[in-house]
Each structure stands twice: as structure tokens, then as C-alpha cells.
Amino acid sequence: MDTEHDALPWDKIHEFLIDCGSIRNPKDFSEAVVKKIVALIPFDQARVYYVDDEEDVCDEYLLNVSKRWSSLWREYYSKLENGCHGLYAHIKRNGSELVLPCVEDRFYDYTDTRDGGEYLTDYIRPQHLKYSLGFGMSDNCGALKCAISLERVSPCRFTDRELRIADCVQPHIFNLHRNLYAAVLSRPSEAERKAPLTPRESEIAGLIRTGAGTETISSKLFLSRKTVYTHIAHIFEKMDVRNRQELMVKLNRRRTPPLG
Image 1 (cartoon, rainbow, N blue to C red):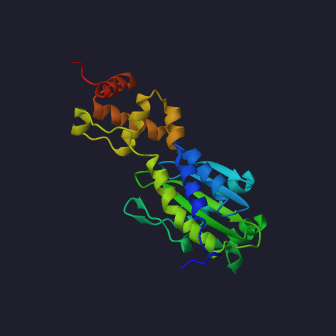
Image 2: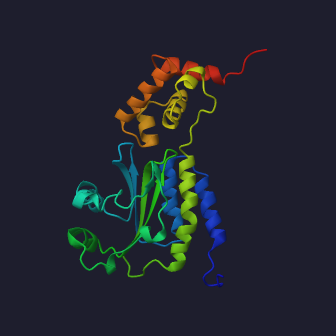
Image 3: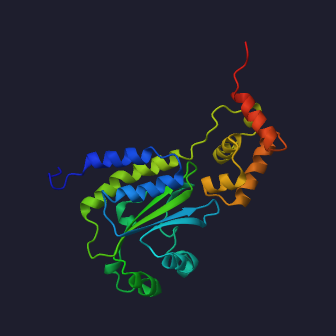
């Protein structure tokens, strides 16, 4: 049973989750997580990396971290030693689904490593990194979309209480993030019933219906333009249309109630 000193700050945890849950854009959501979780789990600096459908880092958000160090990681150290220091080094999957790791797999103590090779001596130590705590978040298809690292350069390690808070909030922010990628189309058309759209195709079709262009879709869903064009081609084929205008007409017709 928790003592008064060890009890988790449930009011602050609920406030944190409610604040983050009000955000509807994945990128804004992940940045909000970093900015707001500091009230629960203090840190000195943080990194957020966004991942596209080709499993490449396509963007980043840095808090008190030099772009130089981040670029070195992205361009060199993440690929060093067969990627053992990259985003996917400690990712566990159940089929195509991202598996939530236990706290031991998310917490790194760089002060306790005697021989970490080039990565430790030339990258971690020059930045004075002591500890880090990571979070991974996926889309509704189970693909990694965002990775967050909360870091301390001070000699104060993350406490057991802070790690318990991390264990408590992680599944909630994971699910909130997944829900942002939920398919926006709920009633399939006849063409879709014959050749159902995938969740990603439904998501893109819904954005096209609102008038979003390729660049907007690419930025909003963290996809390369090539991937977006491929999805659109599949949507056109399944929906039996030749262009975006025909697609929008078909989508809007099925949302218009019959007269009479």
C-alpha cells in the first residue's frame, strides 16, 4: 500500500491526461506530452522523433538539445553497429502491433555502463547525459509513429516513484495517440465493400474529402509524398474514380441523406 510520501499524484496525472486528450493532431499531441509531463517527471532535455511509413525519421522536436547532436545521431549513431542505438533497437512487436515495453526497457542509466564503445564515449558522455526515459507511440495500424526521450544531465536519476508514474501514464498516452489515427470513414460504399479500403486509405480518403492536398496529408500523417501517392492510387482503383474530384463527389454523395 502506498504511503503518503510514495502515493502517486493522481490529480496531476488526470489533469495531464485530460489536457493531452484535448489535442487532435499527432504532432501537437506528442509535443504537448513533453511540455506537460515535466510537471510529473522532471527532466533537463527531451527529444521527439517522428517516423514515416518507411520507418525513417522524418521530423523532430528538440527541447534543450543541440541540433548538431541530434543530426549526428540521425545520420550516424542511429545506424552504428547494425542500428543497435536506433529507434527500433528495443522495439518489440506482436505481429505488426507495437508492444508496450516495461519500464526496465525504457529506462537507461548511462552512468552504469563500463564499456559502451564509441556511442558512449563519443556521443553520450560529451553531452553529459546521465539518464533517459523513453516512450514509443504508434498509429492505429500498430506502426511506430513517434519516439520520445526524456533526459537528465544532472546526477539525479529517475526515482522509483517517477518510473511508476511513467508506467501509469504510458498506456493512456499510447491509446490517445493511436486514436488520433482512427479511420474517419464509417460507412463503406459499394466499391469499398467489394475492395475494402485499409485503415490508412480510409484516413487519407477522409482528408481528401476535406480538401487536403498531398503536402498536407504527408505532413499530417508523417508519410512521404511517394507513400501518399501510392495510397491515393489504390483508393482511386478501389473507389472506381479517375481523380480527386470524382472521389470527393462519391464520398460526399454517400454522406448526403436521401430526399423525401
